[in-house]
Length: 282
Ligand code: SIN
Image 1 (cartoon, helix red, strand yellow):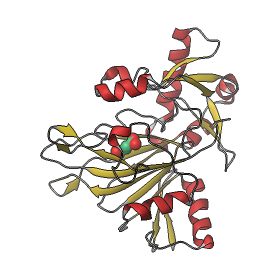
Image 2: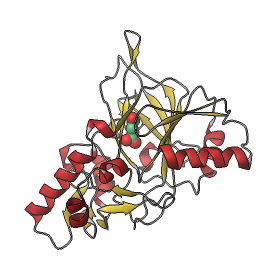
Image 3: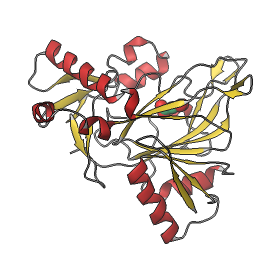
């Protein structure tokens, strides 16, 4: 197995490993360490059926239940379809997941440690893959703040609400109903990574609605400033998809965004998505 870091502040490709086969503890430890270090890992050319994908995810922790149940795989409820494909006029999966910069499920009390996407169909135009996924390092963004700014935000806590500003910009009605059942949660603005100890900015424009004890206008202005800083191009890594990529990312260290630059029915995109349990942000 070979670990090839990307030239960016995050991201690595893991080569010469077959995730369909059980991994030895030594191999898994190297992957786990690489995941903590590089935060976004890609494994090219994997041939994974659903049980194999679930088995690989389980090496990192408990696999989570999906709350957008209408997009769950009918046989494997741990797997959600992320897809623009329509059958009988209906989306078979989450068609616009990742439409804004975010970190997965920050609106839950215990957001997932890791998200995995396994590419089954990738849209292509003129030989170029569409639908890149963009990542940004919230750890490097934190480290780049001035000491004064770091001190100012160190003890702040933000309110995360999935039915917040992002939801109001237009997703499907069924999604909206499920989103509105999720109560708001409060998390530190600066999260300490549970494995590396690095400090990571943990706010996004889409899902943060306020900061405890701060007037709303002031809080939203600060959230937007920190969120814009987090996605500065110097902290980024872009993943260009190929069919049979297994990509995984660390929801504490990075935020991500999907490029929705492809259209049904001329382009088809189908991913299997799975998330692994995390820790309560501290
Ligand atoms: C997501 O945000 O979970 C999906 C990202 C993508 O589809 O590229």
